[in-house]
Image (cartoon, rainbow, N blue to C red; front, side, top):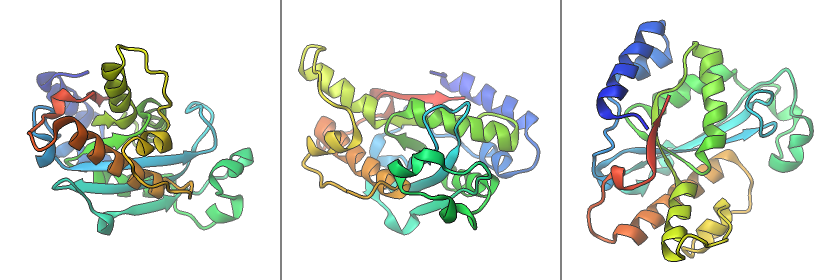
Length: 230
């Protein structure tokens, strides 16, 4: 986890290496402070569909995201982008339902990342299983812009694990999958396996988790398993 001063230094360092681009514009903006109050912070819930689980050999097929402002999920700002791939989807189609024919006319990875970074500006990213998705996002940023992504992230999976560990003396043994985590808060099941649907699911889970933990009391980002990735 990067401290505030270290984050600003890293931001300047990456900015100096980055030519004019969507990434350059992103890095010129103000990054959120983890000392901020949660309900006063802007978030962007994000999910990816990939050809596999290895960021070194697999690639992104779609990215979905939705903003969270004022402790509300803003569906008006939701976006789902397919990514064109010359390598095809392979056997992963049975998981996410994206076929080669679906991505023939899709936009490039750069176009998807440009749009994503514009939406992410000034926000904290919400992910469920951040380690997996951040691996792919970092690979994409290095491929497109030549530098990694510097971003504050809250992992709803880690947040759920933290809650369950706290309530069971460290041995809960319960599933941390997105669907099972949602059921513990009586959130509805969404059956479509789609990056945007899962992004909305993650946003709703996060709001339920924060409400369960803090109620109407204020809470700071630093009280959550939040960290800067770079």
